[in-house]
Amino acid sequence: MKKWARTNLWRHVISLGMCAFALFPLYLVILSSFSQTGSLQLTSFAPSAISWRNYKLLFNSPAIPYLTWMKNSLVVAGTVAIVSVIVGGASAFAFSRLKFRGKKLGIQLLLLVQMFPAILAIAAVYVIMERVYRFAPRVGLGTQAGLILVYLGGAMGVNIWLLKGFVDSIPIELDEAAKIDGASPVQTYWLIFVPLATPVLAVVALMSFIGTFNEFILARLFLVDMGNRTIAVGLQAFIAGQYSRNWGPFAAGSILASIPIVIIFLSLQKYIIGGLTAGSVKG
Image (tube, rainbow, N blue to C red; front, side, top):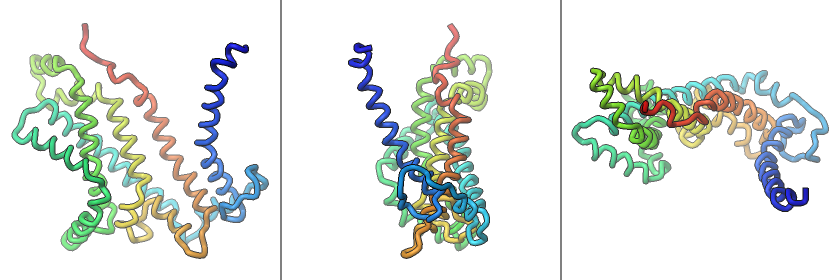
């Protein structure tokens, strides 16, 4: 016992301390969501009285379309995740396996664009989408379709580079064997690359979904109409007032908004922790 205490006790203490440090803000948010005062000023760190007032306000107030905000976030984030996987996977396969003019220049341009912070392009993107709205109102400024296009443009470079690195690790012998059997590049992509790349495709989909679901700056800039707002922009209205900041409903809405992310993460967990080398060349 003394030997275990000398060698392992300090590790457990540090681990428990780090877990407590990470979970303490979440614990305060949960307490605030059940608070009756609607503020972050708590008299104690133990729940004295549990009130569902903040949660009822989210669903019963006609001025707060919480379910509409949640639906908008799921639609936008889900669309970005699906399209990112489809377009990113096909593009990575093309840059890694196919030969075409401008291949080297294209991949270098993708890398170059990623070196600049995305915040620098906000003004330019705003002006571009404002002009797009003049001749295509459904995909311009203030629309969810326009916001999806902006998200996809910013995420494609990172996703393509991530997926391309994985495609490069797949043995070229698989492609050569498929060509000998008469498979086309499209068949090689669907029958070889997609099954092997399921774990990394799941990671790309998860990261794209979480990043888009939690994004605030672009969504706040593009979505002005209350009915088109995402959950991050909608919840910001609770704490944007100068004299009235309803932290209770904000905390309750944040807790409910985290549920879809947790569900999706648990659903894709088996693919994320799965081995990336499964299904390699047969010996």
